[in-house]
Image 1 (cartoon, rainbow, N blue to C red):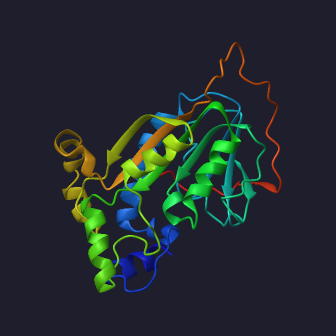
Image 2: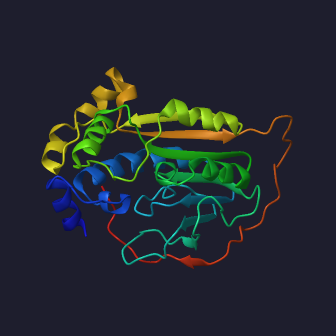
Length: 264
C-alpha cells in the first residue's frame, strides 16, 4: 500500500487519497515522525487512569503515556500491522457519539480527526462530555496558513492534491475559539513541519534544516500544529482526588496485538 500511495502522490495524485493512505507516503512519514516526537513529550507527564486516542491508528499518540488504561477508538477493526502497541480498541461508527461515560477520561488525543469529521463541533462537544474536570485534550491538525496549505489550495483548482482531498483544514485561531466556547483553556501548542511541500524523501531530508529555522523565524507557518487544552469547570474547587474512578468500561474492546517496526 505504501508503494501505491507514493506512486499516486508522485504522479500528481489526480485520484482521491484518504488520510490513512497519505500517511504512508514520504511526506506523511515526515509528518508522523514530527508528531510522534511532540506527542511523546506532551503525553509522558499527563497522569490519571484513562486515556483514549480517537482515530488515526497509524499515529501512536499514547505511546509514551503511562496511564494504566489506554484505548484506541476507531471506526474500523484493526488490520494486520496497524499498531505496535498492545492497547484495546473500541469500534465506534461515529466520533460524535463516543461510547464512554460522562466525565470518565483523563486524556483524549485527536490526531487529525476534526478536519475530516462531518461535524467537528459535535466531536469536540463529545470530548468535553467524556473528560473529567481538569482533563486534557490534545489536537493535531493541518495548518492552512502554510506552504502545504497553499499548495493544497492550488491543488483544489488543478485536481493535483498534495494533502488528503476530503480534509477541511481548520485555522488555529478558529480552533481556539471553539475550545473557549467549551470552557477548554489552551495550555500549550507547537507548530512544525516547515519543509516545503516536497514529495520525495531525498528533498525532505535536504530541507531538514528548516525545522530549527522555522521555529525561530516563522513559527506560525508550520504545516501542522499540536494544541493541548484543559477542561475547566467554572465554580468547581478540587480538593484531594478529583474523582474515585475504576477501570474504564467500554463496549466492543478488542486487543491490538499486531506489531510493526518503530519509526525512527
